[in-house]
Length: 236
Image (cartoon, rainbow, N blue to C red; front, top):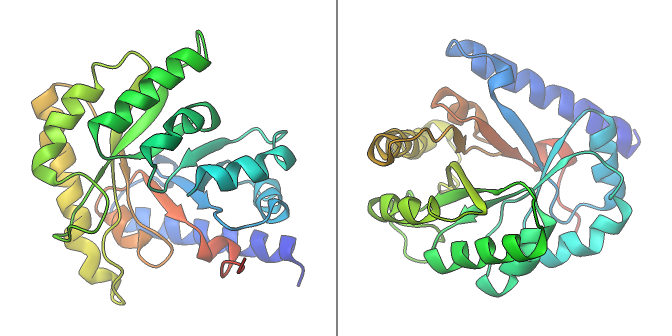
């Protein structure tokens, strides 16, 4: 089976899983955006997924996307930065992506806002999500839940950023059901945060290849799926 057929088949299976998970809790599958995580994937694999109908892609690193975009610039799709962003690469990211899904400190948000304003006059606001650390491990990226409201209030003040919601990366557990409390925690935080700041935060980005059904049950509006679409990541 060639790579194009394999990706088409995988994408169909993923969509069937999304449909089943949504139906289980009385949701519509069109409420959920599938983001194909294409980090380390070659341009031809990304193009195959696009030709199979995928319209949202997520990259982890600014430099990797800069190297790949020349061969994919004709695709009419959304490109999200889903990995941790270092502040010194914020200016480049602001001009490369439609969304940065991993804001976790004020300095990073400031740099993105400034760069977006300087690079793209009259451009739409850059969509951003706040990444929340839902487990008690200091080495992980993300803002602590109790700090999310203060960061959100500051991000809302920026003229060139559009705060859309929250994102989390829970621990990888063999039993997806055991991840459920982390997804529930993010949803509850989003709901309380929206009340506190007085505006809706429609996006909950949570769930990956092995656990996105549970995330959908807990209210995910975006799921980030790599391996289940593209297969194992190629080694570099």
